[in-house]
Length: 181
View 1: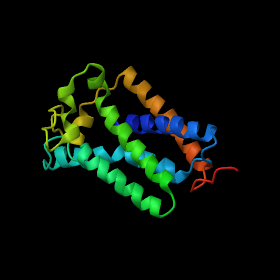
View 2: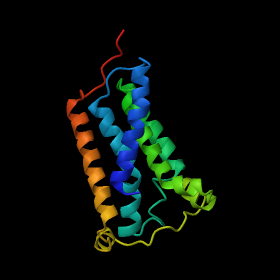
View 3: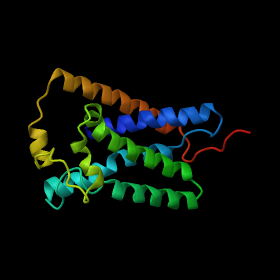
């Protein structure tokens, strides 16, 4: 998935989950902090792994260290613990949900076709990462992108989704409001 696709998928899942909680009267309005946390969670694995693998050749794959459950789970628990201590557990849950949607977004096709050998990155370094990428730099990758009608349509959808997110973000309070009694 591209970064904007991970963000859109995480945002959509977050809206469904949070919307259900609001509808069940289990929580108040969504906050900017939660929206930022879910987007940060959707981007962090690639922001760590892609540069370290593609640019610096420190990692064996663009899906290794930050894509591993051995890093993801403790990291999400640590973020949750910090924000829970500060009285904003919902922000930690949004981050963890965003992170989880990123990992799911990277395996859903392999899951659909039950190609379990492609799941190995989830347990890196205990298992070797699946060799899916070619270690090109971002510049080489961008130069090789062919502009097609489906790509332009995807950018249009991404721009529309980004606009919806921006409006939602600007209308939201910084912190969640307490549940109505």
